[in-house]
Length: 280
Image (cartoon, rainbow, N blue to C red; front, top):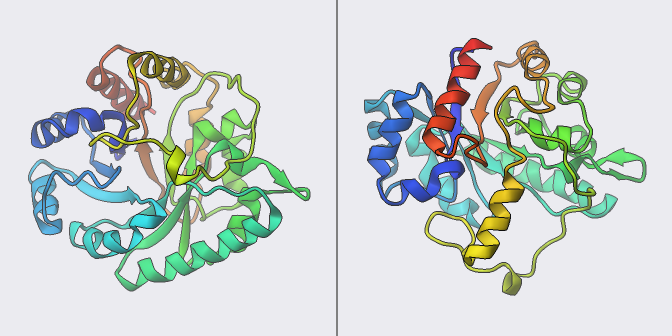
């Protein structure tokens, strides 16, 4: 694989302290660009961010955008050269909500298209749960316009739901325009529906986009994230996924999402990820 990107959430805490330095370090590892997380723009104007990244051989390929932040990002992202605005996940617990979510994605797709981008949806394991005998993700894909809505296959979350990611991509060829490259160990938790979290219970986030946690809670979160192990050392068949994604009538965009630094350092971990993909 000679072209791949990286999602900023894995090193957002470092970015807020040295945006340019961290981006330059990531560029030297061989990543072709970024998927923005939590509006981390480094204080740049859209054109300024595009120019800075271009100067170090990178670009903005996509951005994860919470629903409530859609309007401001419709104004900001086009100037960066961003091609995709991705919804990071929706709380769907009934068949009615699934069909309503599909319509919502279509409406967002129209808005994104009006400013030169495409809207997308990122799956989690719960999107493979069934409602009245049909997977949530099936409902979303089959009831959205391919011209307006793309899907970002998070490989690890599919495997954690006991879904063969390669087979699922083959089921809907051309819909998975983006692929989140992520390894995983076996998932020990029982799958459940994603439920909306009341605003008063969401907790405060720090400037990097991660929730503020006390040391004990942070340690537990880190232990939970360690399921995101070294590429090629978990249960994901990355070669099969790549073959399925590459066989689509669209050219897939591969984006590393690194939840856990298995080497003990996020940058040596990202270097190993890049090396694995180059050899794939």
